[in-house]
Image 1 (tube, helix red, strand yellow):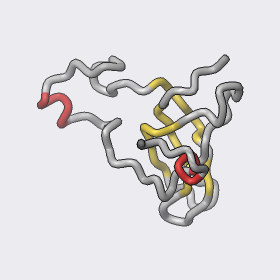
Image 2 (cartoon, one colour; image 1 turned 90 degrees about the horizontal axis):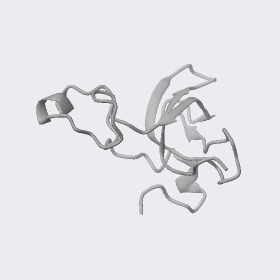
Image 3 (tube, helix red, strand yellow; image 1 turned 90 degrees about the vertical axis):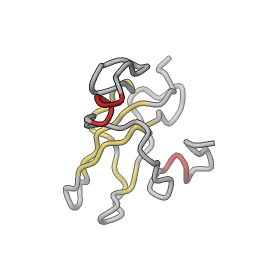
Length: 100
């Protein structure tokens, strides 16, 4: 049975080619393997599935629980604490919000 926990996903809009990353990617159900909730492109509002999904971890130290210093955290490329756009998230729109 695949995990239903939060993951990190990479998105590319099939309509306008915009790209983004999200630290709020979830499987549609505990029985779905590789089927994730879509997110809408903020530029053209097209629903997009992630093309790559990985475990949520710090991009600097590679740990699930970050051990970086404050200075190292300031230099990070990915930010799992970035505000979540629930208006673009199909999981939130389904009545099962990512953020409770």
